[in-house]
Length: 375
Image (cartoon, rainbow, N blue to C red; front, side, top):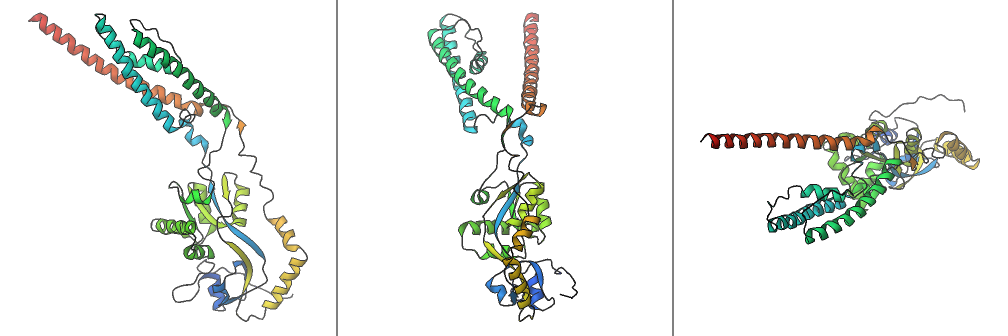
């Protein structure tokens, strides 16, 4: 069309939001002040913006989505021995162990005292522990009541340890991605991940004025986080991308942008359809003489199917990451066994402390006996 042009960015790097004095920031503000002839960007159409600028024929349509980084399962390998059972199940097993030790200790003590023995039942905890992991320690001097309880603990231990062992095999040999949340509602109601959106844009404006309860919760979280971390409303997508890659941060913006991120990094997870639908256009100042020309060309592009051609050329193809998060067999590594080493270390420390107490107690006993013999 035989013309030259100069590209520039808005000084404040914002898309455009209305300030308290009814002036606008970013690209919209530049159009309002007629500092530029046109915005070549995916500027969303709104009624408020249309009062201070012109929109061309639409160039696209998109809807908001959220993206976050999937936790690395290797970071929680030390919890592998705890994962086959839920926290509540572990708690119930612990309480059961203590109750069985108490009951069996009482019955063994009563039996030995009745038979004229010393009544020592200090090894009862080891007996119950052995039964719960399908071991069979030899125990003598047991009465009928102890034998009955002993038998039922054997059955209980056989069933519970069999269930645990079968699940443990699956956790060792199968790689499974556990997502912290899968929906926008779940994300807003958790307290592990923080979140943000593009500041100085229609996204921040739309969340702020939205009447939807879930959007209100999201925006209130952004406001609270912004007090300690201003980057949750940063105007640059790259700043948000760095926070997402760092982990435990969710970014909400249009889907097209986030799909390009996921194409480059398969550790990212997309939650689609979480926010408002947007229609995008090129922007021009009010009464711009170029509006008709620009819109006619864009309409021609649309009728000839060029928008679809360009989208297929430049936007991500089918998600190549979809097959990378499926379950598959894996080799057990040292990191998978680190829990067993931790358990052995903890047991060694406890045994060492116990040995120190026993040594001190033995020395005191010998000292008392020597003192009595001298007296």
